[in-house]
Image (cartoon, rainbow, N blue to C red; front, side, top):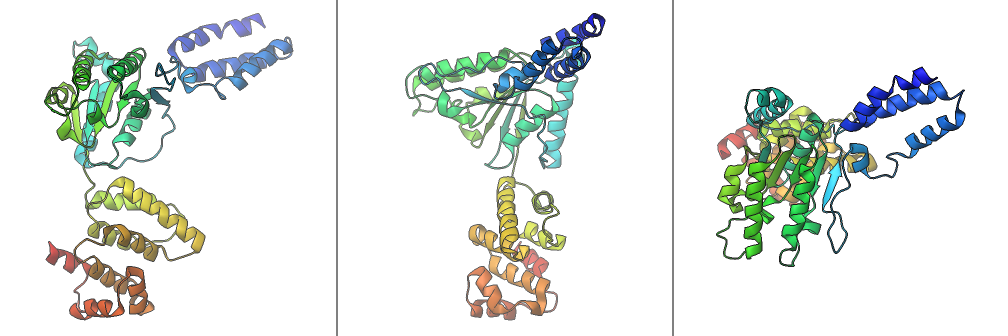
Length: 382
């Protein structure tokens, strides 16, 4: 029994120092199996440890890092920690953005090669763009691909109305993120990194910007500093320059919108024609991936619960938010007639769009039945 157990020690010790919980678990299971007959009590004790470890215990223990810092007065955690190893949601980016993200991941994966040649790997990224375009999801993708825990700053518990308190809390978070390999994610970065020439800010925020400038300069190679903002114009210019990589994530283009609609609606649950989604992707332009996902989930729920036509449900939800798009009603009327022909009446179309039957009739009459389809309307509109 002694030899069977002792051969596992190097792996267990190495994995423990590296924070490799899975290897420790596998080695422990192997030991339990081999000593069960000769020492059942020890076997049972080891099994109990495996059962209770991580079950209800802080995620930080299972990730091999220390418990997170807390606010001195409220005792609330200043960060949220997540293990995104099982994150499998696809992030659809433009080709240009994907190239930049893939390059960053590759350079981080070859960090030792870069350092051995005296070249510093990138260690900070600034993500900027409108809400809902995938900045937070990108941080999770980096966490998964680089196998690093994601430490997210909780602005609600970090930012304080008391002078000096915000700076103290932020310093705790920064020190904590630097203490072990990780990704520190600061969302709504403009809340703490505003321009120092902003006359509305107190001296406290100006001091915080100075702290951030120094931290970005001295950030350790084994960790990554990721910040995201919807308002890049509010950021201090010096802060902007300190980031190794700056990635703008914009609203998706037509081909990317189509991929997103397919991703969130084509789940083997409902049947919706691709050419209809092509029409939707072309017609609804200024829509974020988050909005596409939210609308798709609403459609799926209502179709499954009420057993309705998914195309009509999708149009109704889009009408609620995007009815201000020029020629929206006309585009939808033409598409519905193209899709359904005589199977759908003018009264049904009017009900779907919340307009009068006479309006539907007017749009149909004003459009030549001969090939003046949705594509032609869009071409004229542009």
